[in-house]
Each structure stands twice: as structure tokens, then as C-alpha cells.
Length: 185
Image 1 (tube, rainbow, N blue to C red):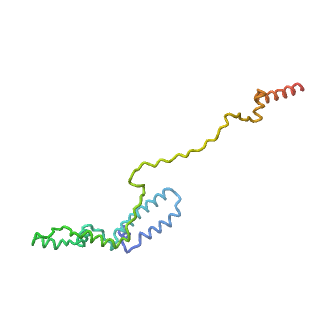
Image 2 (image 1 turned 90 degrees about the horizontal axis):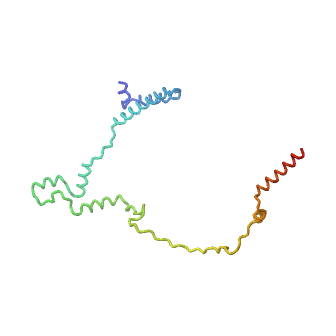
Image 3 (image 1 turned 45 degrees about the vertical axis):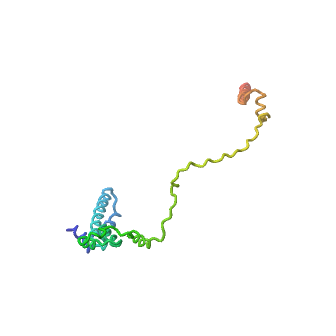
């Protein structure tokens, strides 16, 4: 009975229940209460769907058979006349389309289309020609100074002349400092 009241198109009980649930939701603090609210929303949405399905709208569903009959009538075939005349004489085309039927339909639909959609290659052309090879650009190479000796930096020359590593020199210097320090003590 309560369900019938909510589904009635004259009552606003479903809307009132949703507004009340919205007010009560602000005071929800536990997960269980939130789950119950979610369950209520599922039930309310199902009731709303049923209520919407019961509405009587003026929209009608597309009837393909009626459309086909109307299209054939427009193109020049009247099935009622064909069936009446079919019994009288066999000279009638027997339901075939007249020769200008498609032309007539094309002229009528042309009114609704201002121009044909333009054709463009969205993913390339239909032909698969091999790609055009690119010409190689010859660049001049710099003349290498192989004949000339490369100048080494001054620091490296000194290291080559002394034949000692820098770390070796530094270790020997620190060792000398430590030895003099311990001798003085």
C-alpha cells in the first residue's frame, strides 16, 4: 500500500522521502548508517524508475513497417491499389518500383542536406606507394690535424716529466710532516 502511494503520479511521497533522507544524512557518523542510507537510495531510485515508466507520454516508438509502407507509397507503389488491380489484370508491374522512384526519393532528401560531406584522407590515401627516398646531403669533413702533434696541457707535461703520480707526492709530503711532528715531541 505504501509502495502504491509512492508510485502514484498524484502524490509527492517519494520526493518527500528523498528530502528527509538528505536531511538525515548529515547526521550519519557510522559506516552501518551510511550503508543503510545507500540501501534506501537504491530502493528510491528503483521506485523512481517505475514511476517514470508509468508516465504516459505522447512519444511513440518507431514502427519500421509503417515507415517502409509510407516510403513505398511515396516512391510510387500503393499496395492497396496493386492488390485490387492484381486480381483484374496481370499487366501491372506486380509491386516493382517505377523507374524514377529512387530519383524521386533523392530529390526529396536533397532538400534536407545542403551539401555532401567532404571527403578527406583521415588515415592516408588508399594507395600504398613506397616512400620517396630522401637524398643524402654530403657534408664536408673537417681536416684532421693528424700530422700535427697535439699540444698537451702544461700540467700534464709536468707529470710526464716527473714520472710520479700526484697522490704519491702528496703521501710523501704528509709522511714527512708526520715524521717531523713526532720527532719534535
